[in-house]
Image (cartoon, rainbow, N blue to C red; front, side, top):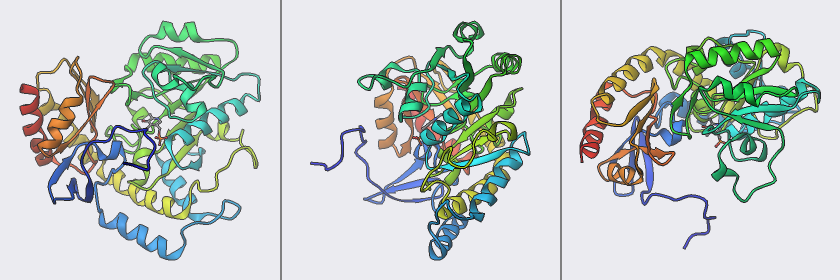
Length: 376
Ligand SMILES: *Cc1c(COP(=O)(O)O)cnc(C)c1O
């Protein structure tokens, strides 16, 4: 019997503790974590600096209303803008990925002041579960039973520029995408495709919105994954890895676009509270220092994964998908029994999202299990 709504298929393991890149269950069994709570625990578990900052902030001040000055938001926003291409950019803080994307959709519409409102998004993309973000998510299985959706989204195919041109209308305000689709099966956009999309946005005056909820904050080896591509997004959203386990989302926009929001345009009671911002500032500083290691270990992980006989290997840095071309749910359970936490997404893709602190020895340890399972 459970008091909880039946929204998740839960695996039969109770994790009670974590340390570094390992999780421990009730019996004290150790698991190597190659999922990070779906790209959330960027610093792994029990990072002393993060734990210290959270405890310290909890003692001082947990929450203060957005009706008052918030130096914790200023500090974190400064760190995010420091890595953003437009140093005049501005940040709004939310509590999750879907909320950050709602903010992005609202900002895009407000920027055009009602004259343009449509947004092109992509099949197999994922932007969240609230109405705006869900409607932006071009996946039938996510919409089913929840219609009518929010109006104004036109769907195109990733890496098919003609499909983008077909979806373009005179009242299109922007194009929203993940540079590597996460939930949809770890599908990277090509450099050529994104280059063309960027040029189209410039030519037509469209806003380029990059959802970096999963790819952002160092996951791919760059602080923002868009940095791998020849594009300068007008809007970027972050969440998952940003707080290292404390819920927080961020909406970042170029200075020009951010001007569309004025007092009263948008808001959040909890968004950017001192606890979340303090934690995220620690995470961001540490992830920036980790970037060279993420690149190095990421390349090593890629090299080792190439040894496996799978249909296709896709990803970058510490975000990888092993396309099996067949159902992979049983593999997740098998790996778990062997002490390795991985995930199966889009039905047939084993997704690896280890904590950003992993080293070569952890890759070797994971490969032992993956090699054995995939061989079978
Ligand atoms: C997980 C995810 C979201 C939704 O984030 P929530 O915090 O679950 O609302 C949005 N976009 C992308 C790319 C994601 O991976």
